[in-house]
Image 1: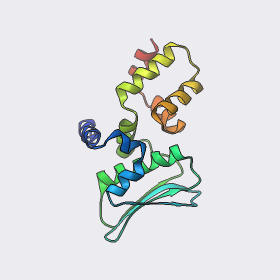
Image 2: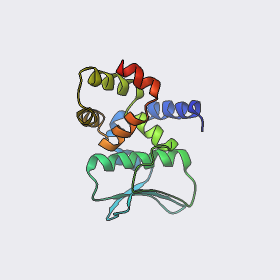
Image 3: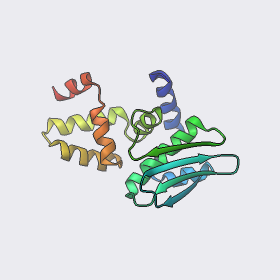
Image 4: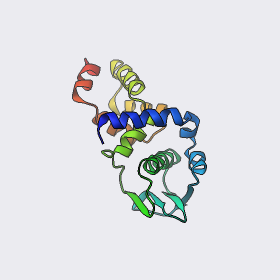
Length: 164
């Protein structure tokens, strides 16, 4: 999938999804007929099971609510992009940031232009990196790890522009 295709999907999702649904992804899952289950699952943060009988997102019950919401949205985007009867998609241990699903989820939750604007302001005001990550995590209501990874994945040219 190329960047233009991903941008098109992000635009379609953004226009389709009300931001309030992104804040309560369980409601959106319900609209799609997807059941959310929380289970003890130390090695898996989330999984999506879709077959002709059921659609279930399973979430590790020990995760913080903000992280659960991120994974639910990640699985919902996965469902919207790749719905396939009898498919099982697991995300084990860590968020797989390099997938198209994660890129789209991140753009929905942290629109690039808004992210860069806030990030640049914090950098310009000499906030320490750890505090920048905490602030951005609170602003966008996503896990710190997602923010940290988004910063790390910024194009070097963008980083130079922001930091200069």
